[in-house]
Length: 193
Image (cartoon, rainbow, N blue to C red):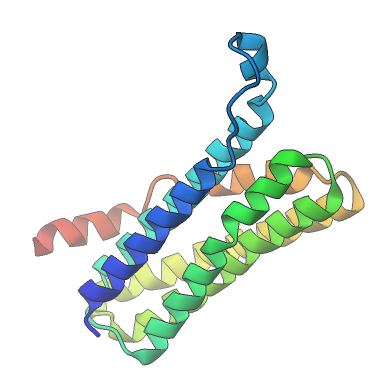
């Protein structure tokens, strides 16, 4: 399989995940702003989850833009990463109905933790196909992802022992670290065009 096919497959799965996310939004019962406000919790959770999946996709794209080739291990690690992402709509639907409940929040946090962990494995499996210039970028991505995993573990612990909503709040703060991708990746990608 070529790198381009794997990227196209991944893009398709992410597009489906984002589409399924919006299906959780229900039409308000009436036609007023008060009726719309009645589903505001679902809208907020949807925006958070959409942003999360978009950030994963953006960083996945950047990771593969500096990966020179792929092998079977990369393909399967990527499949498991996509598996974790396909759980996001289910976890999103559950917390949008039970935002302040522990078990739905735990599932949401564990889903993000799983995606982060597998993304770290993806970074570590693709690093062997990096050139000297990209090696530092791969190591930086691995450190940043490890930090995200640690923050998520703190979020899950805080949610379990203190207040369930802390899982989503801390993860929302954590994903803000990933909104702007590594400029070195963009610079390298633009030089190679």
